[in-house]
Image (cartoon, rainbow, N blue to C red):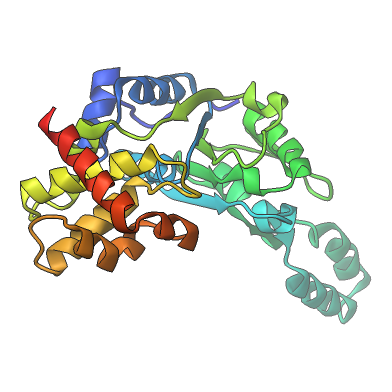
Length: 304
């Protein structure tokens, strides 16, 4: 098994600093999990609500390490042809036809070469094993894929190799840095989890989310950013169909700046709530007295 890794941060503090340089403010527990994943060469499995920054972490890590990012977006019905490899059938047929027009020796060689490495079309998983330097492999929203797909990942995540029946075993040139994410719409099998380090990603607290917003939207008035963050934090405490993520918080601040708003009021919230909430049932809850109470509670949070 290959043992070489890209130059990685030498401490948890270094991980936090590396991510912060790219505008990603990781808490100590997440930074520790990522540090151990890099040092031990183990996949990092991230679960949490949508919008807490799981996918963004992989993107920032790749940029920070100067590594290629290879992303596999999972979905229902995902199979090996889309995720790992498929044979270039058109090229195989052309190869066979050219051999048929040649000598007996040409035909014999064609039978051996139609399943050669040059006939393989790489998809994300095979590409991650074949890169000339360690890549960051993001297996995103694994819970959306069908359960049988998890079984295929076991060999990859255990031995850093992939067995292709017609060809043989492809071993990693360099061990990729693997991050798997799940929004927990279904449980992932224990056999796969055991091969990973695990971290549950929480929404940031008020102060950390404010710092994120200040980094991402530095031109926004500080008072407006604080008010928006406090309001979003209160919204997440409600029983919403879909709580707003960090990206929605940033989008909302950008929208308010574009409208030249310097503070939140009920009319402004109603006019712009579609930036923050994406379900009608959630939007309908922010009407009249409920909205005024939310803003009052957010203001009280700021003053504490």
